[in-house]
Image (cartoon, rainbow, N blue to C red; front, top):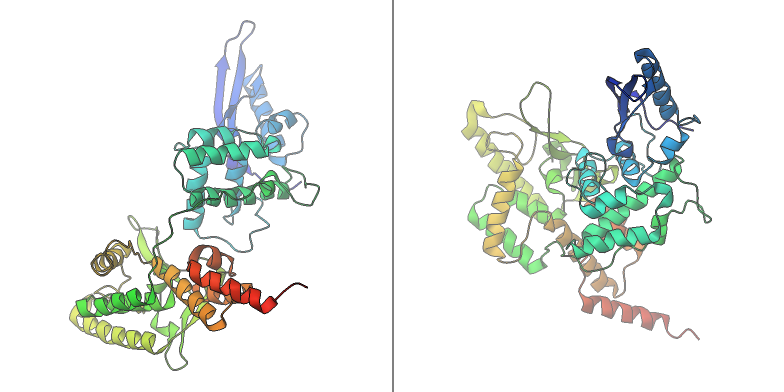
Length: 436
């Protein structure tokens, strides 16, 4: 059996002398941070040394997951909340926790943090002070005893509390991965059809969620034109964002060395992110890795993108001369007025101000550019082919956005019109003809 905990997960809480009806006894208290919601356990002995020795025995047995004296304790502490917390730790290398075998590449800390926030609320993982009542109830269930009815009750409670289908589906995806992880570490046995868990028997919650605001081609061109007319120092950045569908952090992390105008390709290999650094108060913006390995990609530079990059080069040179000695050469394409990384808040504020003016009531935000690019590319491809797009075609669109495959591109980012999809299905039906 692989060890899924280590000494760092255990806290010894001292020794307490307790007076009973008979003779006094010593209680050497301890707890496992990621088991049973951090509940304090006791190890008793007639002397201080005996209690400490008993505690060490229980801790070692707990860590190795192989002793008989602690078997009943483990059986009653393998809760959904404890499992969820172990799974979260497995996503971060170097924690000493058995890694998630289904995870091929490490996740960004911000992504893991978003998972943790979701699980704290709706599963009640250890120290989840913001846990909802349904989360506390579900998280306290033993992993081996969770039934489909328990999962449905969880999602029903979330729906009644006003949580959209998108939030419930996100939790379904996380729980599915978490229960499969339980199979990997031996907390659950494989089902009759292989590695099947209770979550595999539950369909993702259905229902409409509020779509991320996206815009059509005419609106996008109007937004770009208005940005140039306004004289915004982010006008060229807005245009590149809308024409490439890059993530905001990816856009602001592009370096001049990533731009090859002659070959016509733009390399996206990093992302701007806020992080803590040694000997520095607060957080700073640094250029780090992209969200996932599949996010590293090359994007075609057409004539419009090339023109925007050339204009940005001229604007940046003017700002460099104006800054003088205050200029810091970061090598980035889009920078602050002194050459450093662009603050997200400044970029967001400028974008929102322009969007509210040009597209009032739409609620268009920078991330909406990714939805816009995916939708426009899919629409153009369907109009050219006159049929429903294949998984391979969705994957080619997803590759532009840095998705691993076309599934999330189709299901989340591609907002095709019902009329276009209906015509495409009819074209498919005509091409197939009668089955007989």
